[in-house]
Length: 217
Image 1 (tube, helix red, strand yellow):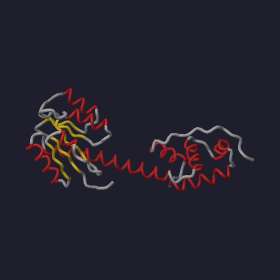
Image 2 (tube, rainbow, N blue to C red):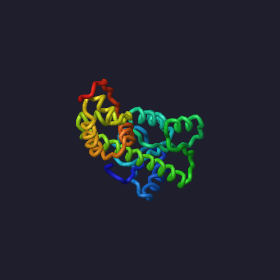
Image 3 (spheres, rainbow, N blue to C red):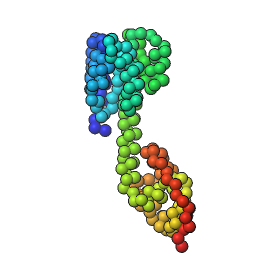
Image 4 (cartoon, helix red, strand yellow):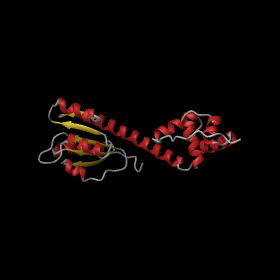
């Protein structure tokens, strides 16, 4: 992750509201970006570090609504956590926002601690996502260091096959399998078949299928 400092984006057409939330966030050590409309936010380049979006539901004019922006971010693969705020009590809208992954839906006026707690929750969620993504990236980099044979053995090992069975599948000796398996485990920094299976699952690697061939004598 490029930065450990969190960024809070506040999108609200009421200047008093966005300035007040911005000041609260700055006091708690966060970077802050303020926007008067969803169009302004969409033109922003987001930071790489942890972040949270505080988003009003309704905007005047032709700017997308808060829910429309939420859908757009989801469709384009932008996983920023969203805290919705609204001056209108609408159960249907709040349910839809939460159903699509919003951290919180707060009616105005809200207490300072309420909005700070919701933002903290959103930032913590985003930090966890970034940690997971870093782990997946590192795992993929380690997998890329494997030879073709080590990769085959890794995939078959993850399916629950032991050395003798893998040797039969690949048509090599059991000793050869054990040598490649040891190198593979060392490169991946793993210690058990369960860890291998978890790594493959975490990076979304699809197991290949191998024809059964007679093992070499």
